[in-house]
Length: 292
Image 1 (cartoon, rainbow, N blue to C red):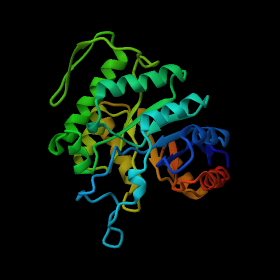
Image 2: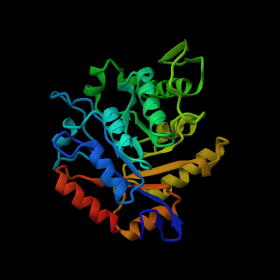
Image 3: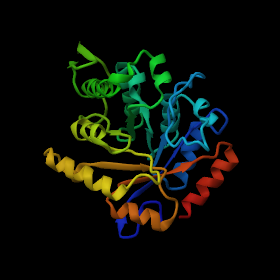
Image 4: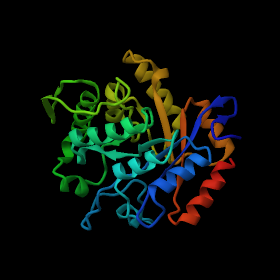
């Protein structure tokens, strides 16, 4: 089985991971992914983890209450994506996910467009999320109760900056007065933006309203077949082509049968999670995944 031919369907195989300062450089990591035939590399983001954190992290349970320290060893995501893009030729580089309510969308739009411009275009993908760590978010001045609206407005501002010579946007939380900013994205439609999170009424509404696709973390609690069907139906009901929906599944199964199941659902990309950090362990895991 190759990295892109799964059963009777074509589905890309990528890698997602927490790239940390204890591991190999993002450039070396990206090159290793491309050399083994993977088509994408998506990197996680957290700016910092307040010690006073009370927010339960996804997957927390009474038997696993503590946040793994990998969360506060993460490398800077945009710098890492730039390092990954500059040494590769085909690899799609993206975030899984950018915590957009903690970011300045004007500055972030320019940084990502610069990577897109110099990497030849079509190789930068933006996964975004609403965030779960209230203390981390509020340290950036973001308001928890309006985080979803802030992310929606931030995406609209970035798209305007990627697309328009005179970019502007009037939003509920964030706005942009008419402005000039270059470089633009290579595609006139801007960079693809995928929204991460569990399918629920508010998440579904945002996905249908403004996202190009969905980038969830697969867990046993997710009924993926039902969620994909719900999302496609919602796209169609809103007048959006469900076949235009981009779906990247993070923490995808690393066995042939599991991957064939994803492909049968119409998933375009399965991102396999590498939890290792040291160079030798990461390369070993990539080698194992490349043989699926």
